[in-house]
Image (cartoon, rainbow, N blue to C red; front, side, top):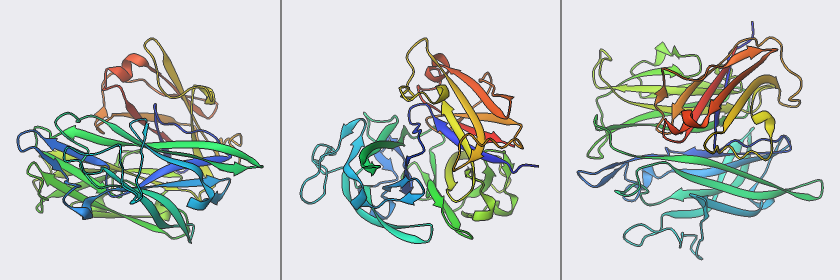
Length: 362
């Protein structure tokens, strides 16, 4: 029997290609709420440096990870606009209401496959949420790397989940929200935090942890404030979900948060293709259009070496605020060891104009 394997997609952020692959990773959490009653941002990135998210790219050329020195024409992008920096590496064209910069750029050393790499980083040093900004923002990174004597461009992005504080008055966060396993025996620890509407951390909380792809509860971690995931637990990708409660009976759920872990060393890979891998398709739909999502399992080295042991494919949908979409949703069908689902413009528009999907194969 084949191992259960998961991967995810977003209709505005799919990066396809084998030669150059890129993704953005986050130390911390890219979620922030705004409380209109108190005019506070939760968490407060400006006044608490320990909570500030750090974003960095992981770029691979083939199987080799690249350093900052190997990336040409690098640019950080906020909501489709290139961020400009001064000599102190502080943003000049994105400032908060007090005139303070929103971003700071630099480099960070990260461990990938047992080796250290110096890569670019972007730190959010002020609050992005405000009375006039309570929807999804995007942060992107783009550049080019040399492949066979030519410059091969790449681009990747992540969403910053900005929202108004819910009627429940709580915000749950997982940190890191995204992580990479790149060596045998490696573990990743995900920490859970819950904030109240006044911005203070809730100390008395209860949790339930799940493999979001399979829906299976990780019972050994119930009520824990952290979860350690080992390399043996991950085949290609795993999405972790944490539900937050205020009572020991787990009847009053006040928040939910997600984290993603990729195992880049696995020979098996769950491929997700939009519109048959059409390079001209940006992942953005106009009214009347639809997108066909196709998924299959093959080796990392050869996307055509389909693993016939995987015969069942399914998909779960979430809106931009990480709330699961239930009820009347598109169904993924399985044929010839591939899963296929067609998603319409109207379905995306009816759920906040951006949706995410978690595809699971077994």
